[in-house]
Image 1 (cartoon, rainbow, N blue to C red):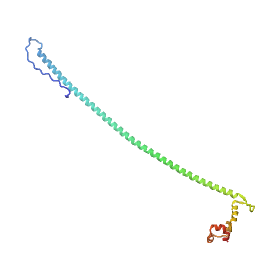
Image 2: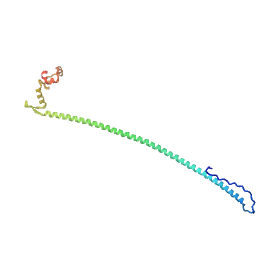
Image 3: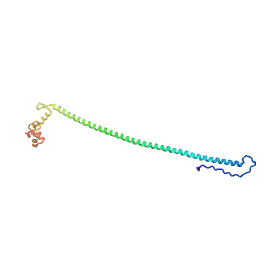
Image 4: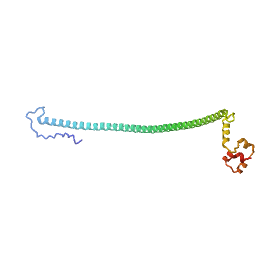
Length: 212
């Protein structure tokens, strides 16, 4: 039995015999006390047994409850472990999906910028081409317009183009010039011109005297 529970001791009796004053069927005082002591001892033994049974049943009940609690705790621990493993797996899958989405977004942005740059480059090239075409058209129209303009030569009284007027005025500043038509009429080759060892200025200002 546990130390914190005091064991009930049996009653020990030792009586000295006394002769009864009257002989009848009634118990003597000593016999009565003896029976009382015996009954008390029976009760003590029964109490001790009840106490032992109670402790045994309490221990069995406690052990069964503890076993149930341990089993429930083990089950709970298994459920928690499975839940943690599931969360870990879901987290890994989530990270994989997030990484895939981020990479897809980055690729989409890069593709968008590539298309945008290509489109901008194509637009720039098209714009440059259109500007060049417009410039050429404008220059051509200006040349055509200027070629059709006639100015009055107050010296000769004739109407002539602006270029012809420039050529006519330049003649007053040159000693012996030569025109392209006159140079072409001489049938002088490029080799022959090189052999004359003259500059372009000489050709323009004194070409008529040099080339015969």
